[in-house]
Image (tube, rainbow, N blue to C red):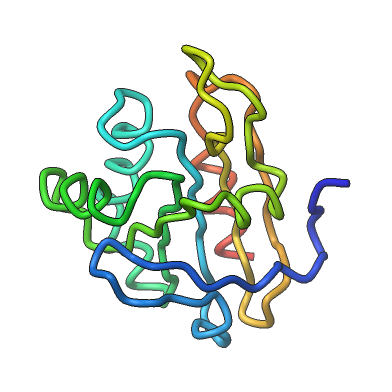
Length: 154
């Protein structure tokens, strides 16, 4: 069963591109935007995260934390973050547990790759409940950024 608006967001601990352990519960009292993405350095994933980067001052202004999650290694994510100048943490779900828990995992992706994060966006409210959930089946589609922003204002 997929996560729905109003559900408690599953807590997690993942390593960031800075090799620091990051947990969702550490942001209690803040709104959190989680962006799952299939693979670093690919076109649509770059566009997805660059949209967040380019609107970062809006998220910062409303005290919202942006997190990017993929199954890439922390080392690949560190280079991706550096090249694209992302101001927010990129987290490695290398073991695929969090992507699966959030219903955002392809069993099989392109080129026969198995266990790749689906493109997805979640807004978590200050109490840790899901305020917005969008999991996309087509990796070429982008999340609804306007709906994400509306959920953040709500």
